[in-house]
Length: 320
Image (tube, rainbow, N blue to C red; front, top):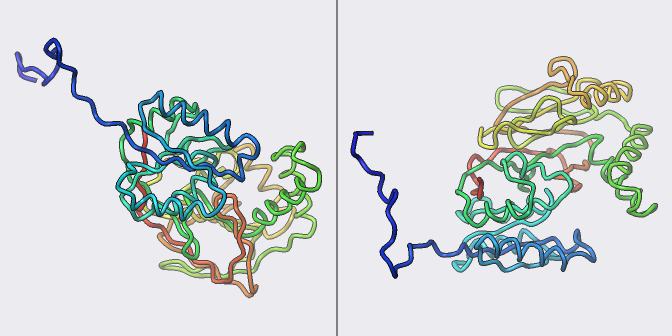
């Protein structure tokens, strides 16, 4: 900088009697998943309103019981809404993102879930008040989303053991009560699924390659994941414009157990344990009439082929 140059506004006070110019408050529609909130939904809504008000945002909170994506899509076309905020876990964030992808309306995230993978990879603070400040005054940034058979997801999707374990976990918690806890229920569910699990025979097609595979799972991420998979579930970037595809090479129960043990301590070998691809699209073919597919923690049933694609820069987010 040339000597004597002055940064505009630096060290300059507004004249007496005049207030400094201030940007208008960001007008937010906050979507809560009422089904996930249970009896505490009103308490959560109150905390969210208070945090956003303290951050200077003008917020309206909606406890949604139906199609969250439809609410987000409607808000995307509302000129009175500056940003749509997902207050909840990864499932809620994914549903809201599905309604906003492809539109200029930004997504804000208040991470109130258990794992909050998307929020962590976006670099958002875990504290509600700090996250609210990002919503109120954060910068807009474009990131990728992925699709499976036309359905948007922000984290990952898979076939094989994981969606079956999720279903078994939910059955276990309904039978034994939520006191058992999600992690213990998931561990028990995974063991039960391993007893009857049969490897999938699939054919995987991608741009420039194709081939049959016999595997216990196929994991597809919105962008590339850490190869440790289970241990960290982290991504270095959300805007590389590619899918991260991981196929277990061991087609047996014992092989899957060994892979799980290595993944928990971050010792997965990408060449030996998992075949990894980084592609723009991939299709999974199978002789099964339908396959269970996990999509950001929710399990849906789909008719093969299961088609995945990346949508680069399709989602605008509010980030630090």
